[in-house]
Image (cartoon, rainbow, N blue to C red):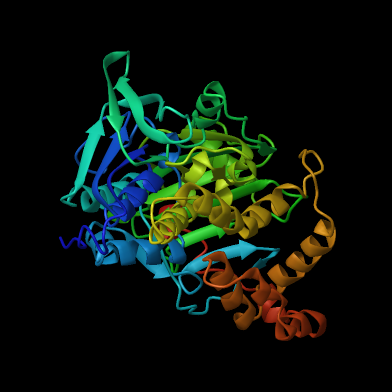
Length: 468
Protein backbone atom coordinates (compact mmCIF):
# COMPACT_ATOMS: atom_id res chain seq x y z
CA UNK A 1 0.00 0.00 0.00
CA UNK A 2 1.44 3.31 -1.08
CA UNK A 3 1.28 6.36 1.13
CA UNK A 4 1.85 10.03 0.28
CA UNK A 5 4.75 11.95 1.72
CA UNK A 6 3.76 12.97 5.23
CA UNK A 7 4.78 16.58 4.61
CA UNK A 8 4.31 18.09 1.15
CA UNK A 9 5.48 21.59 2.19
CA UNK A 10 7.20 23.28 5.13
CA UNK A 11 5.05 22.51 8.19
CA UNK A 12 2.51 25.06 9.35
CA UNK A 13 3.00 23.87 12.92
CA UNK A 14 4.23 21.10 15.15
CA UNK A 15 1.03 19.42 16.36
CA UNK A 16 -2.61 19.32 15.23
CA UNK A 17 -5.47 17.49 16.97
CA UNK A 18 -8.53 16.06 15.22
CA UNK A 19 -11.36 14.64 17.31
CA UNK A 20 -13.95 12.42 15.68
CA UNK A 21 -12.99 9.37 13.62
CA UNK A 22 -15.70 9.76 10.98
CA UNK A 23 -14.95 9.99 7.26
CA UNK A 24 -14.54 13.75 7.70
CA UNK A 25 -12.14 13.16 10.59
CA UNK A 26 -10.07 10.61 8.68
CA UNK A 27 -9.75 12.75 5.57
CA UNK A 28 -8.94 15.84 7.64
CA UNK A 29 -6.26 13.90 9.51
CA UNK A 30 -4.73 12.83 6.21
CA UNK A 31 -4.74 16.41 4.98
CA UNK A 32 -3.20 17.81 8.18
CA UNK A 33 -0.43 15.21 8.05
CA UNK A 34 0.86 17.19 5.08
CA UNK A 35 0.97 20.43 7.06
CA UNK A 36 2.04 19.50 10.62
CA UNK A 37 4.94 17.59 12.06
CA UNK A 38 2.49 15.49 14.11
CA UNK A 39 -1.25 14.86 14.02
CA UNK A 40 -3.27 13.12 16.73
CA UNK A 41 -6.69 11.65 15.90
CA UNK A 42 -8.93 11.20 18.96
CA UNK A 43 -11.95 8.89 18.70
CA UNK A 44 -14.45 7.87 21.38
CA UNK A 45 -15.01 4.41 19.86
CA UNK A 46 -12.41 1.71 19.80
CA UNK A 47 -11.25 1.16 16.24
CA UNK A 48 -11.60 -2.48 15.27
CA UNK A 49 -9.55 -4.28 12.64
CA UNK A 50 -11.41 -4.67 9.37
CA UNK A 51 -14.64 -3.28 7.95
CA UNK A 52 -16.59 -3.30 11.21
CA UNK A 53 -19.57 -1.13 12.13
CA UNK A 54 -18.72 1.62 14.65
CA UNK A 55 -21.14 2.46 17.44
CA UNK A 56 -20.58 6.16 16.77
CA UNK A 57 -21.68 5.84 13.14
CA UNK A 58 -25.34 4.75 13.32
CA UNK A 59 -25.98 5.80 9.72
CA UNK A 60 -23.35 3.39 8.38
CA UNK A 61 -25.83 0.57 7.71
CA UNK A 62 -27.34 2.46 4.77
CA UNK A 63 -26.54 3.17 1.13
CA UNK A 64 -23.82 5.82 0.91
CA UNK A 65 -22.33 7.75 -1.94
CA UNK A 66 -18.96 9.44 -2.18
CA UNK A 67 -19.42 11.67 -5.20
CA UNK A 68 -16.76 11.91 -7.91
CA UNK A 69 -15.44 15.23 -6.64
CA UNK A 70 -15.01 13.72 -3.18
CA UNK A 71 -13.31 10.66 -4.66
CA UNK A 72 -10.94 12.99 -6.52
CA UNK A 73 -9.94 14.61 -3.21
CA UNK A 74 -9.20 11.20 -1.68
CA UNK A 75 -7.32 10.10 -4.78
CA UNK A 76 -5.09 13.16 -4.60
CA UNK A 77 -4.56 12.80 -0.87
CA UNK A 78 -3.94 9.04 -1.02
CA UNK A 79 -2.59 8.10 -4.46
CA UNK A 80 -3.95 4.71 -5.49
CA UNK A 81 -6.96 4.95 -3.16
CA UNK A 82 -9.46 4.02 -5.85
CA UNK A 83 -7.44 0.89 -6.65
CA UNK A 84 -7.40 0.02 -2.94
CA UNK A 85 -11.17 0.31 -2.82
CA UNK A 86 -11.64 -1.88 -5.88
CA UNK A 87 -9.29 -4.49 -4.48
CA UNK A 88 -11.31 -4.53 -1.25
CA UNK A 89 -14.45 -5.44 -3.21
CA UNK A 90 -16.13 -2.11 -3.98
CA UNK A 91 -18.28 -2.09 -7.11
CA UNK A 92 -17.54 0.63 -9.65
CA UNK A 93 -20.05 1.40 -12.39
CA UNK A 94 -21.11 4.13 -14.76
CA UNK A 95 -23.53 6.50 -13.07
CA UNK A 96 -26.08 6.38 -15.90
CA UNK A 97 -24.93 3.47 -18.08
CA UNK A 98 -25.25 0.84 -15.33
CA UNK A 99 -27.80 2.56 -13.12
CA UNK A 100 -31.52 1.89 -13.55
CA UNK A 101 -32.77 5.27 -12.45
CA UNK A 102 -36.39 6.42 -12.20
CA UNK A 103 -36.84 10.08 -11.35
CA UNK A 104 -39.11 12.89 -12.41
CA UNK A 105 -41.70 10.40 -13.65
CA UNK A 106 -39.41 8.81 -16.26
CA UNK A 107 -36.73 6.14 -16.49
CA UNK A 108 -33.54 7.88 -17.44
CA UNK A 109 -31.73 6.75 -20.59
CA UNK A 110 -29.00 4.14 -20.13
CA UNK A 111 -26.16 6.04 -21.75
CA UNK A 112 -22.51 6.08 -20.74
CA UNK A 113 -21.81 9.24 -18.77
CA UNK A 114 -18.10 8.67 -18.11
CA UNK A 115 -18.76 9.36 -14.42
CA UNK A 116 -18.04 6.40 -12.17
CA UNK A 117 -20.01 5.65 -9.06
CA UNK A 118 -18.65 3.25 -6.48
CA UNK A 119 -20.77 1.14 -4.16
CA UNK A 120 -19.73 -0.61 -1.00
CA UNK A 121 -20.75 -0.74 2.63
CA UNK A 122 -19.84 2.33 4.70
CA UNK A 123 -17.64 0.23 7.05
CA UNK A 124 -15.58 -0.97 4.07
CA UNK A 125 -15.11 2.58 2.82
CA UNK A 126 -14.08 3.84 6.28
CA UNK A 127 -11.71 0.92 6.80
CA UNK A 128 -10.01 1.54 3.46
CA UNK A 129 -9.47 5.20 4.33
CA UNK A 130 -8.45 4.41 7.90
CA UNK A 131 -5.71 2.03 6.74
CA UNK A 132 -4.23 4.85 4.68
CA UNK A 133 -4.36 7.25 7.62
CA UNK A 134 -2.85 4.75 10.06
CA UNK A 135 0.02 4.17 7.65
CA UNK A 136 1.10 7.83 7.82
CA UNK A 137 4.27 8.02 9.93
CA UNK A 138 3.36 11.29 11.65
CA UNK A 139 -0.19 10.29 12.68
CA UNK A 140 -1.07 8.91 16.12
CA UNK A 141 -4.49 7.52 16.99
CA UNK A 142 -5.99 7.78 20.48
CA UNK A 143 -9.13 5.67 20.32
CA UNK A 144 -11.29 4.93 23.32
CA UNK A 145 -10.99 8.59 24.36
CA UNK A 146 -13.53 11.40 24.31
CA UNK A 147 -12.92 15.13 24.27
CA UNK A 148 -14.62 16.92 27.16
CA UNK A 149 -13.70 20.53 26.46
CA UNK A 150 -11.18 23.03 25.15
CA UNK A 151 -8.06 24.42 26.74
CA UNK A 152 -7.69 28.15 26.06
CA UNK A 153 -4.79 30.56 26.17
CA UNK A 154 -4.62 32.98 29.13
CA UNK A 155 -6.37 35.72 27.13
CA UNK A 156 -9.04 33.24 25.94
CA UNK A 157 -8.35 34.23 22.34
CA UNK A 158 -6.94 30.88 21.17
CA UNK A 159 -7.71 27.20 21.64
CA UNK A 160 -4.45 25.56 22.68
CA UNK A 161 -5.61 21.99 23.24
CA UNK A 162 -8.35 19.67 24.45
CA UNK A 163 -9.27 17.92 27.66
CA UNK A 164 -9.98 14.26 27.19
CA UNK A 165 -10.78 11.11 29.10
CA UNK A 166 -11.82 7.52 28.65
CA UNK A 167 -15.63 7.05 28.50
CA UNK A 168 -16.88 6.93 32.05
CA UNK A 169 -14.52 9.59 33.36
CA UNK A 170 -11.25 7.66 33.76
CA UNK A 171 -7.75 8.70 32.69
CA UNK A 172 -8.37 12.44 32.31
CA UNK A 173 -5.59 14.37 30.57
CA UNK A 174 -4.92 17.47 28.49
CA UNK A 175 -3.56 17.26 24.97
CA UNK A 176 -1.96 20.43 23.61
CA UNK A 177 -1.79 21.45 19.96
CA UNK A 178 -1.56 24.49 17.72
CA UNK A 179 -4.72 23.55 15.81
CA UNK A 180 -7.80 21.68 17.08
CA UNK A 181 -10.31 20.34 14.54
CA UNK A 182 -13.82 19.26 15.55
CA UNK A 183 -15.10 16.47 13.27
CA UNK A 184 -17.42 14.98 15.89
CA UNK A 185 -20.60 15.18 13.81
CA UNK A 186 -24.08 16.64 14.25
CA UNK A 187 -23.92 16.19 18.00
CA UNK A 188 -20.84 18.41 18.28
CA UNK A 189 -20.59 20.17 21.64
CA UNK A 190 -18.48 23.05 20.33
CA UNK A 191 -21.44 25.51 20.50
CA UNK A 192 -21.99 24.78 24.22
CA UNK A 193 -18.29 24.76 25.08
CA UNK A 194 -17.66 28.10 23.38
CA UNK A 195 -20.66 29.66 25.10
CA UNK A 196 -19.47 28.39 28.48
CA UNK A 197 -16.10 30.04 27.78
CA UNK A 198 -17.71 33.43 27.14
CA UNK A 199 -18.15 33.32 23.38
CA UNK A 200 -21.52 34.00 21.74
CA UNK A 201 -23.72 31.02 20.84
CA UNK A 202 -23.46 30.18 17.17
CA UNK A 203 -26.59 30.82 15.10
CA UNK A 204 -28.21 27.73 13.60
CA UNK A 205 -30.57 27.19 10.68
CA UNK A 206 -32.69 24.07 10.97
CA UNK A 207 -35.16 22.68 8.46
CA UNK A 208 -37.08 19.76 9.99
CA UNK A 209 -37.91 16.96 7.53
CA UNK A 210 -38.37 13.87 9.74
CA UNK A 211 -36.64 11.61 7.22
CA UNK A 212 -36.60 7.94 8.15
CA UNK A 213 -34.76 5.31 6.19
CA UNK A 214 -34.44 1.60 6.80
CA UNK A 215 -31.80 -0.64 5.26
CA UNK A 216 -31.11 -4.32 4.97
CA UNK A 217 -28.59 -6.53 3.17
CA UNK A 218 -29.97 -9.22 0.84
CA UNK A 219 -28.59 -12.08 -1.21
CA UNK A 220 -29.92 -11.71 -4.77
CA UNK A 221 -32.15 -14.53 -6.02
CA UNK A 222 -30.18 -17.44 -7.56
CA UNK A 223 -29.60 -16.79 -11.23
CA UNK A 224 -30.76 -13.19 -11.05
CA UNK A 225 -29.20 -11.28 -13.94
CA UNK A 226 -29.68 -7.57 -14.42
CA UNK A 227 -28.09 -4.94 -16.63
CA UNK A 228 -27.86 -2.61 -13.65
CA UNK A 229 -25.63 -2.44 -10.59
CA UNK A 230 -27.83 0.11 -8.90
CA UNK A 231 -31.60 0.56 -8.99
CA UNK A 232 -33.05 3.86 -7.76
CA UNK A 233 -36.73 4.77 -7.66
CA UNK A 234 -37.41 8.30 -6.57
CA UNK A 235 -40.60 10.27 -5.94
CA UNK A 236 -42.09 13.27 -7.67
CA UNK A 237 -42.03 15.86 -4.91
CA UNK A 238 -44.16 16.86 -3.11
CA UNK A 239 -46.99 14.51 -4.09
CA UNK A 240 -44.91 11.37 -3.39
CA UNK A 241 -42.70 10.73 -0.37
CA UNK A 242 -41.14 7.28 -0.69
CA UNK A 243 -37.75 6.45 -2.14
CA UNK A 244 -35.89 3.17 -2.60
CA UNK A 245 -32.44 1.97 -3.64
CA UNK A 246 -30.76 -1.34 -4.39
CA UNK A 247 -26.99 -1.11 -4.61
CA UNK A 248 -24.64 -4.00 -5.36
CA UNK A 249 -21.87 -4.02 -2.72
CA UNK A 250 -18.88 -6.17 -1.87
CA UNK A 251 -19.48 -9.89 -2.11
CA UNK A 252 -22.17 -9.44 -4.76
CA UNK A 253 -24.77 -8.67 -2.07
CA UNK A 254 -27.54 -6.11 -2.32
CA UNK A 255 -27.71 -3.22 0.12
CA UNK A 256 -31.31 -2.00 0.12
CA UNK A 257 -32.37 1.35 1.58
CA UNK A 258 -36.02 2.38 1.78
CA UNK A 259 -37.45 5.48 3.32
CA UNK A 260 -39.20 8.75 2.93
CA UNK A 261 -39.92 12.25 4.13
CA UNK A 262 -42.19 13.24 7.00
CA UNK A 263 -42.06 9.94 8.85
CA UNK A 264 -42.60 7.55 5.92
CA UNK A 265 -40.96 4.23 6.80
CA UNK A 266 -41.33 0.51 6.17
CA UNK A 267 -42.57 -1.97 8.77
CA UNK A 268 -39.87 -3.86 10.67
CA UNK A 269 -41.04 -7.40 9.83
CA UNK A 270 -39.76 -9.40 6.85
CA UNK A 271 -43.03 -9.40 4.90
CA UNK A 272 -43.95 -5.81 5.68
CA UNK A 273 -40.53 -4.50 4.66
CA UNK A 274 -40.80 -5.96 1.17
CA UNK A 275 -44.52 -5.17 0.88
CA UNK A 276 -43.75 -1.49 1.57
CA UNK A 277 -41.98 -1.30 -1.79
CA UNK A 278 -45.29 -1.77 -3.59
CA UNK A 279 -45.94 1.85 -2.70
CA UNK A 280 -42.99 3.09 -4.77
CA UNK A 281 -43.82 4.79 -8.09
CA UNK A 282 -42.50 1.76 -10.03
CA UNK A 283 -42.75 -2.01 -9.25
CA UNK A 284 -39.21 -3.06 -10.15
CA UNK A 285 -37.62 -2.85 -6.74
CA UNK A 286 -40.48 -4.85 -5.26
CA UNK A 287 -40.15 -7.54 -7.93
CA UNK A 288 -36.40 -7.79 -7.34
CA UNK A 289 -36.81 -8.15 -3.56
CA UNK A 290 -39.68 -10.66 -3.56
CA UNK A 291 -37.32 -13.59 -4.10
CA UNK A 292 -34.17 -12.21 -2.46
CA UNK A 293 -32.90 -13.61 0.84
CA UNK A 294 -32.37 -11.26 3.80
CA UNK A 295 -28.90 -11.58 5.33
CA UNK A 296 -29.28 -9.48 8.45
CA UNK A 297 -31.55 -7.23 10.49
CA UNK A 298 -33.43 -4.16 9.32
CA UNK A 299 -31.55 -1.08 10.48
CA UNK A 300 -33.36 2.22 10.93
CA UNK A 301 -31.91 5.73 10.93
CA UNK A 302 -33.87 8.88 11.76
CA UNK A 303 -32.74 12.20 10.34
CA UNK A 304 -34.84 14.88 11.94
CA UNK A 305 -33.58 18.05 10.27
CA UNK A 306 -31.08 19.74 7.99
CA UNK A 307 -28.72 21.70 10.20
CA UNK A 308 -26.33 24.53 9.40
CA UNK A 309 -24.26 26.27 12.06
CA UNK A 310 -23.23 29.75 10.99
CA UNK A 311 -19.76 29.96 12.49
CA UNK A 312 -18.86 32.46 9.77
CA UNK A 313 -21.24 34.98 11.38
CA UNK A 314 -19.61 34.94 14.80
CA UNK A 315 -18.03 38.29 15.64
CA UNK A 316 -15.73 36.55 18.14
CA UNK A 317 -14.25 33.13 17.56
CA UNK A 318 -11.05 31.65 18.98
CA UNK A 319 -8.02 31.11 16.81
CA UNK A 320 -6.68 27.58 16.65
CA UNK A 321 -10.14 25.99 16.28
CA UNK A 322 -11.75 24.64 13.09
CA UNK A 323 -15.01 22.73 12.57
CA UNK A 324 -15.32 20.22 9.71
CA UNK A 325 -18.07 17.94 8.40
CA UNK A 326 -21.53 17.46 9.92
CA UNK A 327 -20.42 19.40 12.99
CA UNK A 328 -20.55 22.49 10.75
CA UNK A 329 -23.33 21.61 8.31
CA UNK A 330 -25.34 18.44 7.68
CA UNK A 331 -27.71 17.82 4.80
CA UNK A 332 -30.58 15.48 4.05
CA UNK A 333 -28.62 12.25 3.33
CA UNK A 334 -30.93 11.32 0.45
CA UNK A 335 -28.88 13.68 -1.73
CA UNK A 336 -25.59 11.94 -0.95
CA UNK A 337 -23.55 15.11 -0.38
CA UNK A 338 -22.28 14.61 3.18
CA UNK A 339 -19.03 12.69 2.74
CA UNK A 340 -18.02 14.69 -0.30
CA UNK A 341 -18.61 17.97 1.52
CA UNK A 342 -16.47 16.71 4.39
CA UNK A 343 -13.66 15.97 1.94
CA UNK A 344 -14.01 19.39 0.31
CA UNK A 345 -13.85 21.09 3.71
CA UNK A 346 -10.65 19.20 4.49
CA UNK A 347 -9.26 20.30 1.15
CA UNK A 348 -10.24 23.91 1.89
CA UNK A 349 -8.49 23.71 5.26
CA UNK A 350 -5.33 22.53 3.55
CA UNK A 351 -5.49 25.46 1.16
CA UNK A 352 -5.98 27.90 4.04
CA UNK A 353 -2.97 26.44 5.87
CA UNK A 354 -0.74 27.18 2.90
CA UNK A 355 -1.06 30.84 3.94
CA UNK A 356 0.20 29.98 7.42
CA UNK A 357 -1.30 29.11 10.77
CA UNK A 358 -2.09 32.67 11.85
CA UNK A 359 -5.63 33.61 10.88
CA UNK A 360 -6.46 30.13 9.56
CA UNK A 361 -9.66 29.81 11.62
CA UNK A 362 -11.10 33.01 10.15
CA UNK A 363 -10.01 32.25 6.56
CA UNK A 364 -11.43 28.75 6.78
CA UNK A 365 -14.84 29.81 8.16
CA UNK A 366 -15.34 32.36 5.40
CA UNK A 367 -14.20 30.00 2.65
CA UNK A 368 -16.33 27.09 3.81
CA UNK A 369 -19.41 29.26 4.22
CA UNK A 370 -19.27 29.95 0.47
CA UNK A 371 -18.61 26.27 -0.21
CA UNK A 372 -21.89 25.34 1.50
CA UNK A 373 -24.06 27.74 -0.49
CA UNK A 374 -24.92 25.56 -3.48
CA UNK A 375 -25.24 22.11 -1.84
CA UNK A 376 -27.34 23.57 0.99
CA UNK A 377 -29.66 25.21 -1.54
CA UNK A 378 -29.94 22.02 -3.60
CA UNK A 379 -30.77 19.86 -0.58
CA UNK A 380 -33.18 22.17 1.15
CA UNK A 381 -35.06 23.32 -1.97
CA UNK A 382 -36.42 19.80 -2.40
CA UNK A 383 -37.35 19.45 1.26
CA UNK A 384 -39.10 22.83 1.33
CA UNK A 385 -41.47 21.68 -1.40
CA UNK A 386 -43.50 19.87 1.24
CA UNK A 387 -46.02 22.31 2.73
CA UNK A 388 -45.60 20.58 6.09
CA UNK A 389 -41.88 21.42 6.26
CA UNK A 390 -41.18 24.55 8.27
CA UNK A 391 -38.51 26.92 7.04
CA UNK A 392 -37.90 30.20 5.25
CA UNK A 393 -38.52 29.74 1.53
CA UNK A 394 -36.13 31.87 -0.54
CA UNK A 395 -37.56 34.27 -3.07
CA UNK A 396 -37.99 32.55 -6.42
CA UNK A 397 -37.99 29.04 -4.96
CA UNK A 398 -41.22 28.01 -6.68
CA UNK A 399 -39.95 29.19 -10.08
CA UNK A 400 -36.65 27.38 -9.58
CA UNK A 401 -38.45 24.18 -8.62
CA UNK A 402 -40.61 24.36 -11.73
CA UNK A 403 -37.51 24.70 -13.88
CA UNK A 404 -35.86 21.87 -11.98
CA UNK A 405 -38.86 19.63 -12.66
CA UNK A 406 -38.65 20.41 -16.37
CA UNK A 407 -34.93 19.68 -16.38
CA UNK A 408 -35.52 16.37 -14.57
CA UNK A 409 -38.02 15.43 -17.28
CA UNK A 410 -35.59 16.48 -20.01
CA UNK A 411 -32.93 14.26 -18.43
CA UNK A 412 -35.42 11.39 -18.79
CA UNK A 413 -35.13 11.39 -22.56
CA UNK A 414 -32.21 13.62 -23.57
CA UNK A 415 -28.72 12.07 -23.10
CA UNK A 416 -26.95 15.45 -23.10
CA UNK A 417 -29.19 16.77 -20.32
CA UNK A 418 -28.69 13.55 -18.36
CA UNK A 419 -24.89 13.81 -18.62
CA UNK A 420 -25.10 17.44 -17.48
CA UNK A 421 -27.26 16.42 -14.52
CA UNK A 422 -24.81 13.66 -13.55
CA UNK A 423 -21.90 16.09 -13.60
CA UNK A 424 -23.84 18.57 -11.44
CA UNK A 425 -24.83 15.86 -8.96
CA UNK A 426 -21.19 14.77 -8.66
CA UNK A 427 -20.12 18.41 -8.10
CA UNK A 428 -17.99 18.48 -11.24
CA UNK A 429 -20.03 21.37 -12.67
CA UNK A 430 -22.00 24.20 -11.17
CA UNK A 431 -25.81 23.97 -11.33
CA UNK A 432 -25.47 26.92 -13.71
CA UNK A 433 -24.77 24.31 -16.41
CA UNK A 434 -28.44 23.34 -16.21
CA UNK A 435 -29.36 26.91 -17.16
CA UNK A 436 -27.14 27.23 -20.23
CA UNK A 437 -28.88 28.67 -23.33
CA UNK A 438 -28.69 25.26 -24.97
CA UNK A 439 -30.42 23.51 -22.06
CA UNK A 440 -33.08 26.23 -21.77
CA UNK A 441 -33.84 25.93 -25.49
CA UNK A 442 -34.17 22.16 -25.19
CA UNK A 443 -36.58 22.49 -22.31
CA UNK A 444 -38.69 24.93 -24.30
CA UNK A 445 -38.72 23.04 -27.61
CA UNK A 446 -38.42 19.27 -27.02
CA UNK A 447 -40.77 16.66 -25.63
CA UNK A 448 -40.30 12.94 -24.92
CA UNK A 449 -41.20 10.47 -27.65
CA UNK A 450 -43.15 7.26 -27.15
CA UNK A 451 -39.98 5.19 -26.77
CA UNK A 452 -38.76 7.37 -23.90
CA UNK A 453 -42.08 7.18 -22.09
CA UNK A 454 -42.15 3.38 -22.32
CA UNK A 455 -38.48 2.79 -21.44
CA UNK A 456 -38.02 0.14 -18.74
CA UNK A 457 -34.92 -1.41 -17.17
CA UNK A 458 -34.24 -5.05 -18.07
CA UNK A 459 -34.76 -7.59 -16.70
CA UNK A 460 -37.70 -6.45 -14.60
CA UNK A 461 -38.06 -9.61 -12.54
CA UNK A 462 -36.06 -12.42 -11.07
CA UNK A 463 -35.78 -15.34 -13.54
CA UNK A 464 -39.16 -16.94 -14.09
CA UNK A 465 -37.92 -20.23 -12.70
CA UNK A 466 -37.41 -18.45 -9.37
CA UNK A 467 -40.68 -16.51 -9.53
CA UNK A 468 -42.95 -19.53 -9.67
